[in-house]
Image (cartoon, rainbow, N blue to C red; front, side):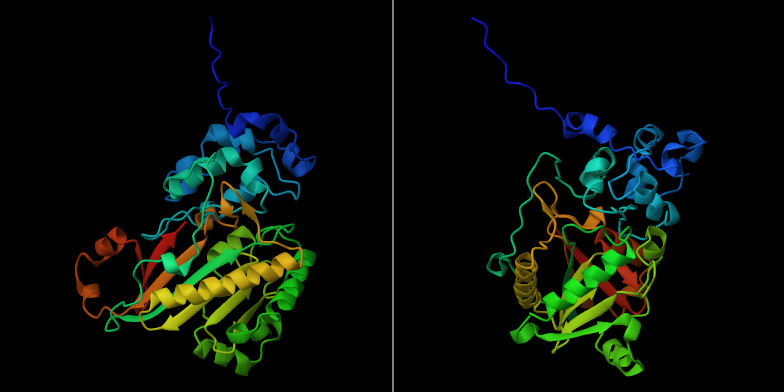
Length: 352
């Protein structure tokens, strides 16, 4: 008797191919192209980003006519990587999403890129995050002789809105209004103040600079090339608690950029306070019917694919007096995935 074989699981890119093909927009600027894909394909010969490792002429030809419902195209996705082809020892994704739908419409590009950047990622898998500080091993006794401070940050994007590279002015204003209302609900040690960058006084600017909240590089080249910096600084701002160690940026790279920082080497305590603050803020947004975007296979969905998943970045500011004089200093940094900044070295540990 013949035994029936179980049906083969169809890849998502094929399963939804018919639907994706219908997403070709009617905008003449997209559908009425005069030049071929080969002529429009960017020069990636010296490009060192993950985008350049994934994107081919064939893929570009297949996807360049598609767009999300809000109008974000493949050329919009890859533009930051085209403009910033070189990078330091820190690996760059070289692309952005304009909305959550971008990861579906352009999945044939994003899935292999995410797999390249995030080791172990599978498009058919399910992401899990453990934000319980009790399960964190170590990190409470980093040597204070060398460790000056610790910080943990993450991004969050709100369901129903385009991301900063593509959101409209109206969306940006609505997101700021929502953030102000949500942040003012924060209580106890997270109670704080919101500062609009557009209305920031010189005195407030100096205070925030002294506290390490404001820096000289608020707007980066990536923000310009991706469209994040449009209308800057309209509807952008920063909120901090009274102790100025829990900070939330509004409408920069993501709708929210959440950071907890502290002097000294107790990284576990920083993670504990960070987790508590993020959990509280997420619940407030959920109660306001505007949850953070989450997908089972991607985790928290953010503008840059490098931040997907738990979206957590831990950095430790350390004092190294003599190692910078070593002839193999840059090689050491690359091996340890460290980034060299002027006068300071930050060690970045990624958790996904």
